[in-house]
Length: 125
Image (cartoon, rainbow, N blue to C red; front, side, top):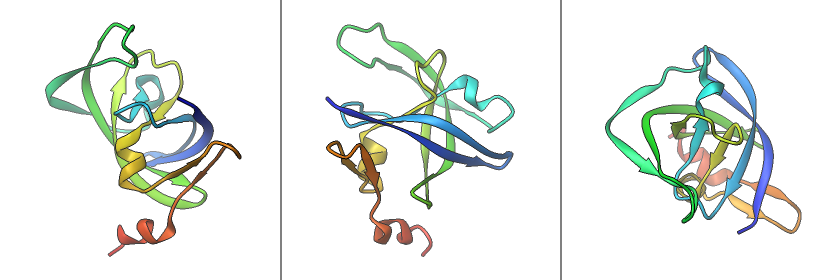
């Protein structure tokens, strides 16, 4: 599956931080590298731990924490929960749950990420 790599601005109660993100429509979770959260955001322990893997060949990773963060795509404020993963190969991965929730469009031909502003405005109501 093709992916789009893009820098995004994330925001927490402690400030803002630019991170390199992969938008991957073949991943069924959104996750963030634990190292990016040091002194940036408060993580919450999950009630039930999750075993996740990124491919059929990979070993499952035990996920014990989650974080809720705001982020901006093309200046539009969005937010979602991200599983906290140690040793993730990139700062964050935005997977299908977040892509569907915000109706994010992945334009692979132009390597662009687009958001329907009408959907983003719904969070303000």
